[in-house]
Length: 374
Image (cartoon, rainbow, N blue to C red; front, side):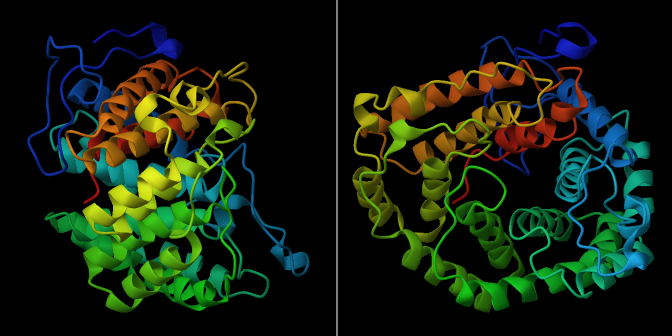
């Protein structure tokens, strides 16, 4: 593993990807594969998250003020998720800490991670978060990006066989239930999907929620998401991928849609759908989708989204490739492109600028620790 200074950190990371629940690597391997998380890297990422989950300012609130009493500090409004610049980044920062500690129980930062989760995910703090959601004017708060990451955190905690995790999961349950109820209320009314490459993207919000529904055995939520996904996306074909990327994307609208549909469709049906949706992939087209996006200024909070795009493209490509036949030429194309995107983005997770450092590590950890979603 190579580190480039304090801010340039990262990276050549070695080893094949380790599925969640398998033994995690604690040292480097010589094969040069970049899709594995070593303990040293986990420690580095944990340090970034520990710093930001307790950093109240700067802060970008998604906050409608109903009256003068709503003029409050981020921590007063959101005592669980006040750090990391914004609510959703704080949520997935907590998810990352839980994921890292679950995979690497002996991390040097283990005690600090447990202390942070104990403090922020207290029952009292979560009750205040739920009360905030129930106030007037909050129905679209963090819909559905923040909702999805909260369910990802809930899934992580409920699947972790650890006494503290069980307590955190129980504390989080009222907020989890509140957001599940919001999905069930909102989705039947959402006539059209949102296909942007940023937070409101419908496919992303459905993908993580579907993972949660299946883990929690919430068959009502699962059936609703499957029905909505088919209604929104099943007939899509010849997606104009050459139009990507948008200048502030951190998700590929095309690839994140495919990442959802591979969860929804059976393997043979997905393979047929994918060939209609992105028919040029096997031939290496379009290059704008398969080559890493250029990030011109990592101190710009919107332009740096493109580092996140490269990370999320990489995880989508890996997921999709794992769902294709070994004989499908698109599989090799996607795996090569995923490696190129990951290699480019991992070198900039710790750029030294908070506009990227407060969130990119979560994308990196998800990419490196979830090779398949079937």
